[in-house]
Length: 66
Image (cartoon, rainbow, N blue to C red):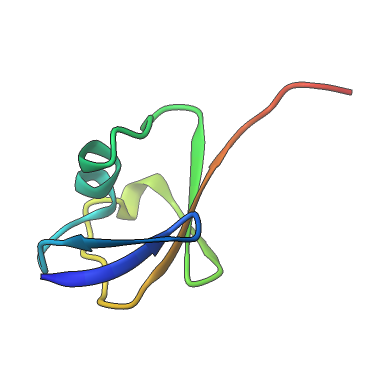
């Protein structure tokens, strides 16, 4: 198990978790969102890559408005 911080909340997750797996585990949407890991936006093409222990992850939802 490793600990990652998602939107300011610590979570204990499997050491081999990916961004896709993390979104599913936390019941977060995988459409219409951007994911930043340690301050860098991760392209969707890298969401199946692992997440390191201690990572700070932000899941951002696009909002329409003007």
